[in-house]
Amino acid sequence: MKKNIHPDYHTIKVVMTNGTEYLTKSTYGEAGATLNLDIDPTTHPAWTGGTQTLLDRAGRISRFNNKFKGFMGNS
Image (cartoon, rainbow, N blue to C red):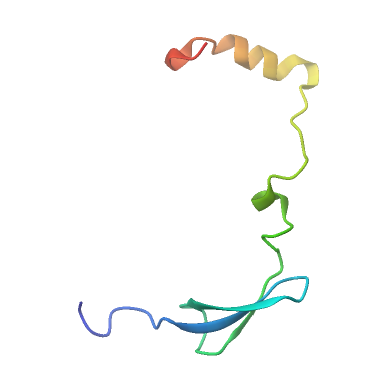
């Protein structure tokens, strides 16, 4: 590999929103830096899937599904 073109890869401490901490390797900050998360992947719906469901208001989803029925071989 070429010298002096790759970022510094070092150990940092990650602090979750609930206070739990762990060490990981990263290019973030300096060696020994602390990364405090604002959004916790153990509880945020983007990572956990959440409990939110898609509502079909005024039949929009049904109309979309009917319009593109059979498109790309889907039935």
